[in-house]
Length: 315
Image 1: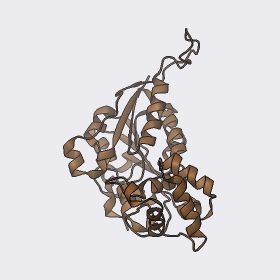
Image 2: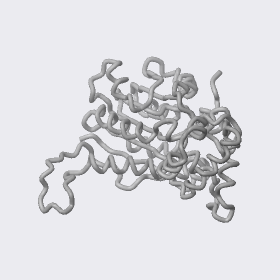
Image 3: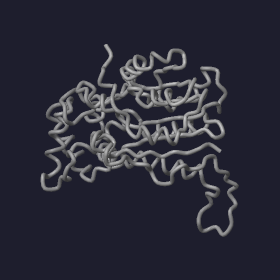
Image 4: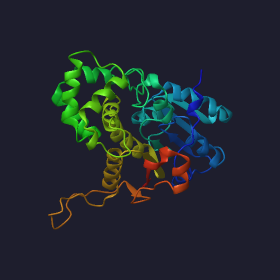
């Protein structure tokens, strides 16, 4: 059965279409197709567009397949991560640089969070899973119950920017010696014990950063993002465009740094008086600062409040 909750309002839709500029007969890739809101809009933006959609979540693909059925053979869907864009393009018989536009909407989707049994939400009780792709072996419960204290601390600090990482890690170790931590609410309880009430951030759940860190580790999100961005630039034809939406500062930092490097004419150390690197830019930035949602969209769609869109054009 298709989860109808996947039919949600895509963020920054008008802005995404404005930077992608879909053209008639073009080939486009949505590397994180989700509920296909962005993909449908791209297909409707110009005649005879072909769209390749990827997602690591089979439930999302089922929803996308239903939503995009009216477009028939113009849509091809694959159960794959966006880091595998090159392989999918090659499998379909396209040359490496054949794509007119790529869209990536990074991170966990609202339907994934809303489904308690997926284990993404600190607001709903469920198994401590957090896998976007059920083919993965590692779960959040395995990390919480098996990793050494020092490794847990490093994970929470580096991938969640959690300033209470050391204390949370220590509390996890103490708790799991009594009984395994197997549910989201069990973990939330431990985190709440670890962070003093007076030290908690206003308007932010105390478990938010820890859950972010665990999710990123389970799904290897930062490595996948770096590989996916590289593959995106490689499959674009000259003049092709990439639009990348992120929802977390660490993700946005990776995108910004990659795009700035590929857009640079020189990457020599600043202390050198002359350029000796021979670096040639691969892209030009469409926007130097991230595009964010307007007040109206933020009000109508809370997920848009933290969304940032960066875009680039292949040279």
